Image 1 (cartoon, helix red, strand yellow):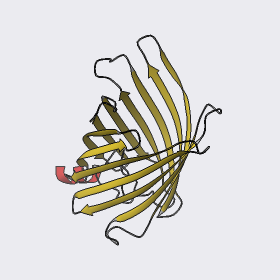
Image 2 (cartoon, helix red, strand yellow; image 1 turned 90 degrees about the horizontal axis):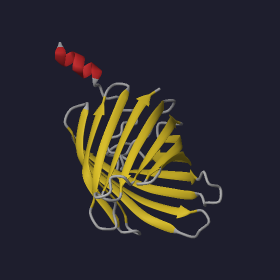
Image 3 (tube, helix red, strand yellow; image 1 turned 45 degrees about the horizontal axis):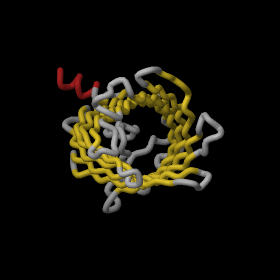
Image 4 (tube, one colour; image 1 turned 120 degrees about the horizontal axis):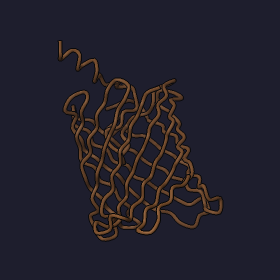
Length: 231
């Protein structure tokens, strides 16, 4: 009886946009007619010796499936900057995002998905940005591999950058996933690596990731938690 209750409580709605990573996207979109709200909290700490200096980013995302392969989302962003002398909290702009996945799982050698994003600034004197991702993933039974190639550019054409994120995880049971995630910026030469943990129930999921900077150009550490609720 206990096993049956746990199976129902932690049943994985396979068609929902469950996240097993916090920086890396998998081969997944919201199903047609489904909606979800996601809350992101990210901590960026530049130096291990200066705990008074940090950046907190808070994002609220509303996501909707237009078809079983195509979804759209709107983000509202807020940022808190902490220094030894002051703390400021302010609206930080918005993002419009769309994703389209090709075929079905295991139809190709890797499962491909395209991601496009428009990033609008709260300061209208700053240039808006575009972001494109090629998302490649593959499942091997309970093991998942995912890689995102990311290209960002200012819409005024003055600057651009190449980034990546990648992950490997193992689904221990329908509710619990453990993994390892890496991300970085090839242009700025910043690279990170750390563990990821994800938990899912029937209507709610959460994922937590912690990465450590691998070179002097990187922040000391970054932490991100995402919570999703099916509407």
